[in-house]
Image 1: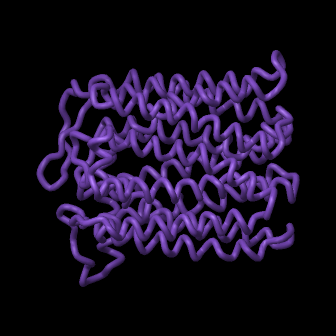
Image 2: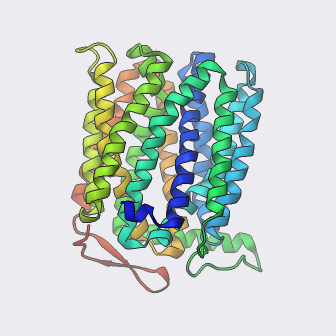
Length: 422
């Protein structure tokens, strides 16, 4: 892992990501706390998450077309600057009558992120090479979990001390710093075989490129399995995102601080898991990492959501949230390594864009259902769906990815072969 981190270009991307993600986690905690505390409604909290999901649904796959056409480094620099500016309207939010600003900012932030996220994921193989890809993804998992460890308590503290404005300024500053660091990366960042902007009808050219990306996914049996997994688990993530705040504050009685510390506890386990996978990940098939990680996460989350009738208090949840960080790291490394190795470079932006759109559609279903059913059926039965779908998804990956592989053919066309590597 250290050898990978010593590579200058990757180190710049990694440090920038760590800073940006820390700000994101602070906002991720502070924003739903503000909405739920202001309204007391799971529906209002769900609407906030839906505002962030809609651009992923509408723009994610299309944004990948432009990520496969533009310089990916420059895309990240520009979009990080725009992300910082788009958070500033949150400084005007003081009460429920301006809650529409929160929804608008969530929508704009998510719209911009549809360009930077696929660009970062597609750029990574260029920075480290395929032989260090699992290690780099493990380091990104380490970055995510470090930020998860720092950001949630920071967001909870800022939300309680100075309100939403402090959380928004923290995240805006993190985007500005991240963009500056990415600007220092010295590498050719245009996709392999990237086409210039079309001189004729740009809409028709964009449509053709978008369809080509969908065919790259649909024509690959292994990618189809991965996307099925993304769809299933996205439903659970939507329920989790909507109901975790009321689960901790109402069911477990943890309050704002308890919520922040439980989210951070998962970062501790994820930190340990990322370090472990960084050492062994190159020797473990990514499909196995994904399947076993999902199976473990699903079973542990079911324990988290259902232990409270037997053992009251936050202590069991805190311990289990540390433990669940371990399989979560396996999921992250396995999933991203599979996507980055199952598609040619010229298609990576569209594959990751389709990944975002698929996850958004599934999360939108889960968010809408949880927001409406949480007050009717109860928080625990609905949030437990998350554990069930991860368990099922892990079993499907382990069963269906045993005999599939993919090798890029000419011009990025998909060819199939038996898969010892999976």
